[in-house]
Image 1: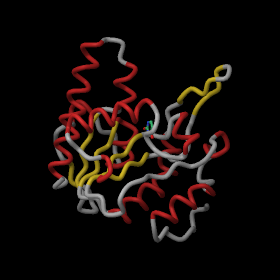
Image 2: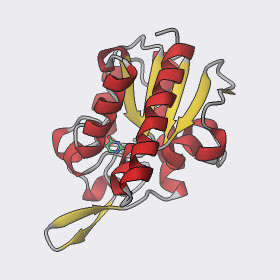
Image 3: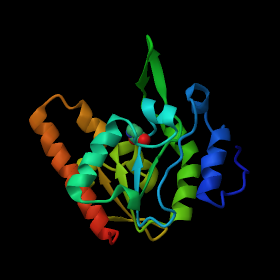
Length: 203
Ligand code: URA
C-alpha cells in the first residue's frame, strides 16, 4: 500500500488492506498485519503499541500476556471489552530473534508515523468519543506529540477531530515490573484510568 492509496471505507477494508501494507519494512519479519477489533461504533478506543508474539500469530490484538492483564483490569473496572475498539499504533510485530524466541522491539518514530495512516483510518471510521492510549508509543501516535504518561494520566486532552484522549501505562510495562508493590500500584492506576476513560465515553 503506497501513499496515494484510497482511504479505507470500512474496518473490513483496513483488516484486509493492512496485509498488503508496505509503508515501512516491519511486514517483512511479521506473520501478518494485526488490525483493530471491536464494534464500529465503539465510544471508547484503546490503543496499544504493537502486536506481540501471540498477536502476530493469532492476527488479533491483545490476546497474549498483556491482553490477559488488560482483561483483568477491565473486569476490575467493570468495563466490558466487547463494547470497546482495541487496536495498536503499529500493526506489525517488531522483534529480534534470540535463539528461537522473538523478543519485542520498540518501533521507531518513522515506523509509528508510517502506521498512522491505519490508525487515522480506524479513528475516522469508528469516531470514538474517547481514545485511551496505553503507554508512550500509543500516546505519541494518538496525540501527535510526546506525552509523559505519569504526568498526563487522568486529564483528558482535546483532539482536533473532537474526540478526547487519555493516557495510561501499558500493561506490558506492568508485567515487566520486578517489584510486586509497584506492580500492584500500577495495576490500580490502570484500573482507575480505564474507569475514567469509560465514564468520559459514556459507558
Ligand atoms: N501489546 C500491545 O501493545 N498490543 C497488543 O496487541 C499486544 C501487546
